[in-house]
Image (cartoon, rainbow, N blue to C red; front, side, top):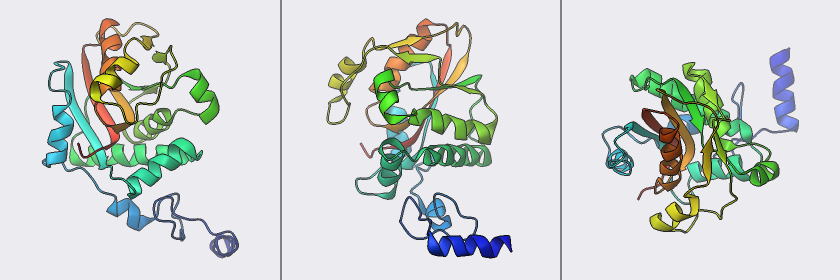
Length: 228
């Protein structure tokens, strides 16, 4: 009877996949089964994976860098991240984080870390958005891997312009000195998780203050990476 009721509700109030807009069926939630399988993964031995690692080759404390999905303009990954960041679809972040964690576990690539740390939003932007998308990603990743996470270790103390459209140097200047660490991080290995990797400037700024607070090693994880 419950199954019939849910089928009836879906008929009257259809639930749609956030990636392809097709109707969800049965116990599908947020992203349909076809899209979950077909989202463009970044394979470990691909040129895209090598490009991700190259962005942090000069940061000796980075022990590993992984991006889950390939970001392309007008693609499904862009649509999902846009809905996560600008349409209040926080459940997308939790799901993508969980999927990422599950796949790293199954592939034997899960890093050993004491804590997952998220890239913070400024309090003004957090108030507008209602949540930090990186927190949602960390929540899902933690649910899959049992590595604890915190959205309060890093704090953004200055409101900055969007990084979109800026060069790497412009991005670095835009985020230099805007983060601070709350608490003692002495001797910890941490995962820093974020939504999308472009130049890596924001993540480097986060690592700089965490290193000054005592962190000894970093693993950089992002849900998506651009092609350049």
